[in-house]
Figure 1 (cartoon, one colour):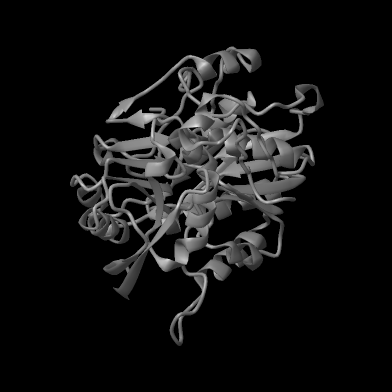
Figure 2 (cartoon, helix red, strand yellow):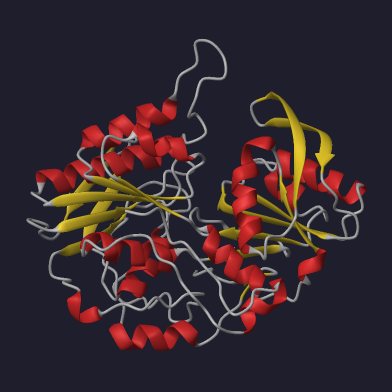
Length: 406
């Protein structure tokens, strides 16, 4: 089930993107074969499904389609998030490549390409979210299969990069797993990595191959701008000191909104204790911004503190919804007016709750893939004239960054 504007547990749709699809392909098909993969909850897409006929996208990038050469581009999907892969294919006007992925009785992964990729630029869409190790291994086997099939280049499109939080040593004798995973992906044969909202920018330097870092927050910003929130009532909150730079950049795009910081002391992994609040939130609409929500311990305790300090409403915004237990109980407990996430990690139906809104990053990733394929710069600045800028006091101009320059 496609989930782009997934609000209050129901899919909100318009005809905006349907007309855009018709200009490219009247029928979007998929030939991904996930049979016998033995993975609970894995989705199966057949060649007759038009899964995303009512897809909504907040952006419509202008490109000269006459310069695009589709004959040497292949888009492949793993089993981690086939829905997002199909959305990307819809945006690009392409079919997903024909690939067979299954798991043997002992858990080993088998991958076979059912079409030639010789001399082609291959893009593999596979987030390494839960189950992290299984999805990571599947990505590595897919890269190896493409290499052995004589693909010209292989780009790993990783909407969510697992192990990104293990990016430094905070105590003695700790591993830096983010660097290890970067080395493994490189050694497997990837020529480039396209990632969305890494936990920290330093993770880019762990790769010895080019990395394009895509900013998924632009989708959330566009959604917030459509709400009728007065600019004077808005305050952006960082749930911890480490996310201050992310929250500051977010606040700057919302008419340079004021910033508040939650001082947090962590006593162990996935355990957090809120100590103090830096900034004023009394009578304001607080927007908490983070790159991911795992167990929701940090953000829920931060929201409780904001209510104690007099915040009128609290919104939670993040790109990656890991949602490890007991995240759903914490997020749906009434602390948040709305929880806004993206679809970099699939959210199962049983994890949906009334306050949840899911936005799609398919158009951002699809546009980035086109630009990598055609050797265009990834950096995009978009100017938009219209009413969406008015709620936050922007006078006719909004700037959005698709990714890092390069």
